Length: 211
Image 1 (cartoon, rainbow, N blue to C red):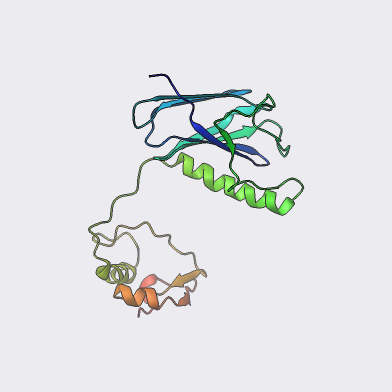
Image 2 (cartoon, rainbow, N blue to C red):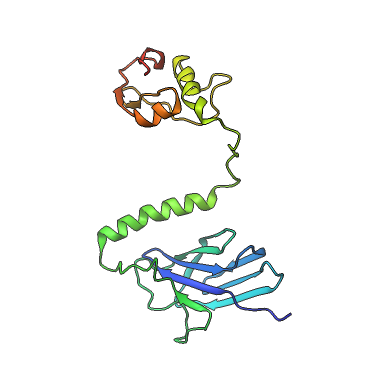
C-alpha cells in the first residue's frame, strides 16, 4: 500500500514552532529534526505508512528540539534559531501542502506583546517538563476514598509522611511558617472543610489539631 501524508497542524511562538502530526495509535514513529527540515514517518492503526517532509521557512536549533507521542498525535517542539522572529508560514516555499493546516486553536498574535511572551515562556517550561516525564502513574482503581482522610490523619499525627502503612502519596513537607491545610476524616469532611493554619517554627505536624 502506498504511503500517505499525515494531517499536520502548526503554530508559531516566540521561541518555538509547534508541529502536530495527527495520527492515532501510531507505531514505528520516527522524527528527524534538522536545521532546515523536519522528516516524519510512522504507521497508523491500519498499518499504513505515513510520511511527511517539511522544508522549513527558517533555520531551527535541531539540538534543542523535542517531540512527544500520544495515542492521538505526535507533537514536535522545534526551537527557532532566531528567537522572537515571527514566521509568516511554516514552509520555505510559498506553497501550502494540502495536508498542512494552521492550528487556529493555539495561534496567538504574540509579536510585540511582552506579557504574552512571558506567559508563553512559562507554558514552554511546563510542556518541556511533560515531554521528559517517563512512565505512567500507578493505577488507584482499588483505592477506598472513605479511608483517605483517616490515613492522612494518621500520617500527620505520626510526625511525618513516610510512616509504613500510610497513604502512598508523595506529599511535600511544608517549611516552617508555610501554610498547612487541615486534614479531616472522612474524605467527605476533608473536601468540605479545607481550612488554613500556620505551621510555627519548630512545630511538629503532630502538634497541629486535626478536625
